[in-house]
Amino acid sequence: MDIKTDSERARDDFLAAIEDAVALDALEQVRIAALGKKGRISELMRGLGKMSNEERQVAGPLLNGLKREIGEAIEARKTALEAAALEARLAEERLDVTAPVRPEMSGTVHPIAQVLDEVTEIFADMGFSVAEGPDIETDFHNFTALNIPPEHPARQMHDTFYLPEKEDGSQLVLRTHTSPVQIRTMMAKQPPHRIVIPGRTYRCDYDMTHTPMFHQIEGLVIDRETHMGHLKGCLIDFARAFFEVDDLLLRFRPSYFPFTEPSAEVDIGCSFKAGEFRIGHQGGPEDDWMEILGCGMVHPKVLENCGLDPAEYQGFAFGMGIDRIAMLKYGIRDLRGFFDSDLRWLRHYGFAALDAPTLGQGLSR
Ligand code: DAH
Image (tube, rainbow, N blue to C red):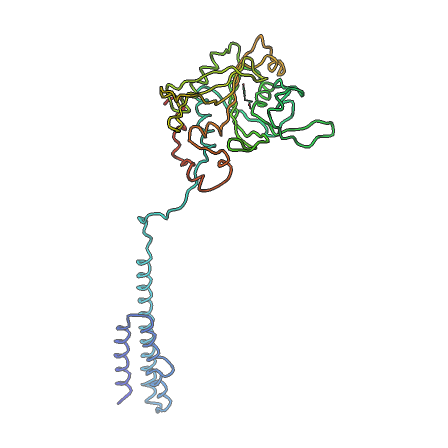
């Protein structure tokens, strides 16, 4: 057989085999069979050495041409196969944007944050703005200026946390109520005042309904002609909006606070029918009252302590436990759960962030 025939056969065989190779590893087998060390074309090339000069002048270009042609055909096929493989992978790995999302766990709004929002929203509707003050207070702001001088028995009602005594004998306290911010506000600015003061408060106490840290919201209105009727109207409107009972009855029960005169505690109507607590009177023998806040007309001495003339300015104030009204509204029995950071509790009592039931509706309901 002459070299020309050999070369043409090899060419036809390999071009067909390259065409037939449908995968990269099959193509690699073809390359080894053709151009590998012991490949058919390599064998043919080795034959050149034994040829005469004339024979080699014909066979040399022929075999070199064959080697190049097969090499190029393999490369072209390889590129095509790789492109097809990539294509297949892309098709297979395509993102399915319609697939449902994984059930990620989302956080919830803590009932205290929720209730603080609800309460401030309602008072904002009545034209109140929010004021804040420090958690660590002076004795003056927390007690003395509020008409609770050092020997006053009311100090004992406040199981106060005291900070270490300073060199001059004075002692800072963790504020036992939000009332000191009344003093700060009246001393900083001229009336009229219409503010609510939400914040943390501290007392040395711990049981089902008391924790050493808790939350209050304070209200203060000071103007030239403010009277008890304003106080009552304001708190009645608030309680009806907050508890979402339009005809909710409120009872203003005479009481005592050093910083107000007269003073009252406010109860809301409720009932305990068959052991079940409901807000609002139901018209039966189970109807009862539940205390929700303290209030009163700001004591003339407090006004004087802040540099105001009681003959010119009067006003009212109130203070309410946020945690307590949150428990009442949302049926939470043990206050301590609020601060245990137990995720099961939070998931149960928490509010969806975009689903706050009363937030943004306030009095307009
Ligand atoms: N500061 C009182 C407390 O913590 C609550 C309170 C009662 C605040 C009457 C007031 C008020 O502003 O007028 O028990």
